[in-house]
Length: 219
Length: 219
DNA sequence: CGCTCGGTTGACAACCGTCAAAGCGTGTGG
DNA sequence: CCACACGCTTTGACGGTTGTCAACCGAGCG
Image 1 (cartoon, each protein chain N blue to C red):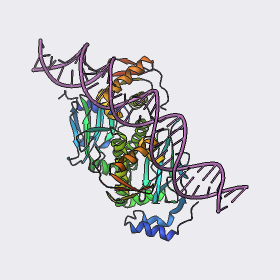
Image 2: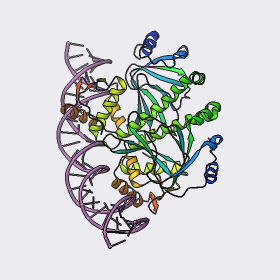
Image 3: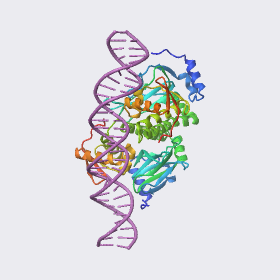
Image 4: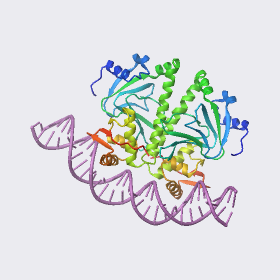
């Protein structure tokens, strides 16, 4: 386990981003730090909590009957998660980066807050809508595009979700995770990245820091 | 335009399925029949309505900047839709079968009903959750599987959503729509269907009626 | 009849997954 | 301190699957 972060510092981080939606119930929230791959929750847990990523990333995985794994969503700093049932399939949410920090809110409190405060009720609905929207964007990526387009789109999405478009991306996830997310093999992801470098579309600083130089609209 | 269905008959159909969630506000609802490809709503419309498929199918399409189209969701008889914003991309919902019948409810009424009745509020939330769940299932399909697996999974999904597992499926959509949905080419969809017939996994009666004979768990 | 549209089949090239091997960084133990 | 192992990343070679192009069939329609 990585060293814990002081609680006050976590709330400062959340407030710093200016989107402390669930601030009113932070007294009942719990903060936890995970190492990479550690499970945050799974199908077997009775999910009566809401979660939010503060630092790092989490991955929403589905386990297929034959044991294969697929990542159906990434949660980055600021994202809420805890949405439920995946008709019959085994679901887990795990930390995707080492030292990921996650806040846990009691579900009952969130819903009570949402009932009493229409603004928050709308915010809660917004979480589901964003999940749908993310899914749909990903279908476009998974869709009719070639491997290079997939990887480029993935980078663009990450850039947009983490900081701003065309900035330096701090990839929180491994190549294996990217491959699982894009429905490609690890090797193809690597090849695509080298191709993109070769064509001066991205620049890599180390293994997990990438700068987008020229971003074509995802075809 | 196909001939209109008497209003009373539409409500009878909905009641027959025993899930007339929004019955209390049916007085304010409007019924409309579409021909295949006709737009139900798009990004440019101010979406202040909720919709529900009564007969046939609708497709939720995203338009890419270069003009290509992708189907991100199908709505079948009984499904609600009307969920919103797709971060920047142009969205349309069109009828996917000829003579599709759709009921339109004023959004304000739905939300008022949801506020006053917690059961309906939960039902409304459920719609978004189902959309997320469908998306995730589809990611599995789009994911690491071969064309035959994709098509087989698609048929299984349609069987489950329309009537019951392993029954006769009345495909409401064209091969082109299936291809767009599964991120395959039309030709590959055809080849997969003939392969599945050859292997006695499905039986086709006409072009759009398919019976699942032996359904392997989607790998 | 000719036209269009949806569906089907064939041939071929390109792309991607699989297998294999090697480089690299980190941590562990001798 | 060094050797070693392990995980992550990268590159190469090869075969299979799939997209593309092309052609054909059948149904519906003016």
